[in-house]
Amino acid sequence: MLIKLTGGKVYDPANGVDGQVRDIFIQDGRIVADPGPGARIDEEYSAKGRVVMAGAIDPHTHIGGGKVTISRMLLPEDHQRDLVAHTHLTRAGCGHAVPSTLTAGYRYAEMGYTACFEPAMLPANARQAHMEMGDTPMVDKGAFAMLGSDDFLLRQMAAREDFSAIKDYIAWTMHASQAIAVKVVNPGGISAFKFNQRKLDLDEQHAHYGVTPRQILRTLAAGLKEIGVTHPLHVHGCNLGVPGNVDTTLATIEAMEGLPVHLTHIQFHSYGTEGDLKFSSGAPRVAELLNKHKNVSCDVGQVLFGQTCTASGDSMRQYGN
Image (tube, rainbow, N blue to C red):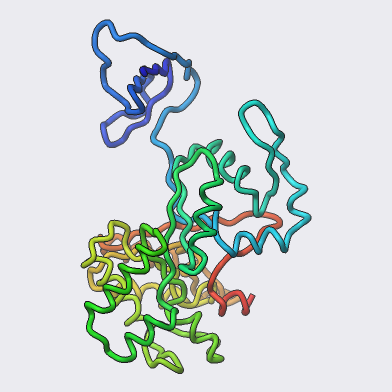
């Protein structure tokens, strides 16, 4: 099947195309430079006045799993907002801060996204998370399994088990939960909260297991690299939202010593203590260090204005809030 998009303004930085008006040909689901002489166009659409570009990818969006289900249960009034009517193209949906699966898919497609990844899938909840993502239309989906505060890994590290055994555990977890990457949330901190620790900084020992977040991060990142997982360790770091946490973030970047790592919603980890309220932005310092470390990537993390819902496994932060 051959589809032709005509008259759109095309942006393709990888190929040096910057806002040129041109036609695009899609043959059997793939973009082709030239369909060849005499090619028969099956469908043609005008993209005049529109931008044609690669679909956006959201590597961190809570679209599946137990926490999303619980959020919907806690916000019944949210179901009445932003209703999506049943049409010949869409099925009915609802929700604003925590939309239904159908509404979430439609909204992402409207914004130009083609792929979304659930970043915090509990292995124990994997089946339900995949079912929920499977019900989300129009975008490709994937999920990251959560490790780093689970009892099995922490016991392995505390016992100084052979690294090959730890790698086997990481690989088994990913396979069993059908995850494409691994996420760590407040490394060790979720577990430490259960032992009445209310904070766990990068080099602070877990009260029960005696391991530090630095050790957890390096162990997981090294394991994933050796296993050959494409997406680096996806990190929700220590001290989220705490003024002065920029120092912890800078130390975390240095601590990886070249190991691949992705720092997520980094704005919440880039706070200083300047000013009358002892609360300021440390973003320039973070950006400067990021530019010096090619092994580190990041995403900013978006803030919804108005009524919203926080979804996180970070028990310490949720308790603090």
